[in-house]
Image (cartoon, rainbow, N blue to C red; front, side, top):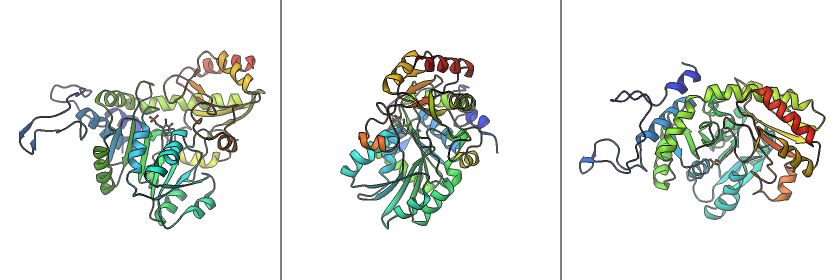
Length: 382
Ligand SMILES: *Cc1c(COP(=O)(O)O)cnc(C)c1O
């Protein structure tokens, strides 16, 4: 089997009749038929679009799946995956979750679909075992979690889910198929915010879900069309272009993040650094087993300061833009307490260790020494 570096460059599309090496952006909403019920190719662009199909096929191949489905956002992908469940189903979610996932579960689907959600810590297999009920239909986790970068034992989670007849879903937005492919562990579904590393340039909102099982693929394909939150042709083109360089980018993100995590850990103004590649990470050994080619570009750090000190630090930075989101070529920094996780009630945030002094950093592909110098002058400003 070829390496992901090669698959990413070639997957999903071959030169067409004109010889174009990248797919055209097909904007047509509908397609001509020879006779009623006899389409020439595609039919209606919500149901299928050639540009979207190129991205979907490429993503299926890169994730080791059989089918991929592209959506208008990561949340649209997740919302559609939840439509696989019947009303009232029980879901186990491994915490900590992306704030938007928590909001979709707690503030929307418990009300509109009667879903019942139990939350357990990703590093507590005994708690996971105890959380299963006869009506448990799905186990949902992020690899790694956000923003505390905890690691779950993927083999154990899949084994437990399947022994209880539940679907195992991994949100692999942070790890990407370059570092880890959940389908290889037996997960039934992988979901992504394509907005982040897969597109990689902070210029698209998109989502995706990938499956290996054919029957599950049929069901999800039906829902993609029936619910309709599909990725548009322009975004599909950009997302495919981004996917072509995923391995190059992830390699650099990971190298930079490891250097900066090690350096940050030694700074007196930094209380702690959370990064799966650090020996000090409580699950470093498990992370080293799961992540094959580096530990990704996301790290979190806690400043030994207060909210005012955090603000002085953020204001002094030159290359780290204060912004939501992650996974682009440029470095970004955020305060989960007031930004990505502000939809969680304050007591829940604090209980989970999401304090104002916690900062989440998306390490970009700039030169690591320049990033380090920037962080150094920021720390001096505290
Ligand atoms: C951003 C993100 C999402 C949501 O994706 P959108 O593209 O913003 O809708 C879901 N999960 C994780 C882990 C994310 O980082």
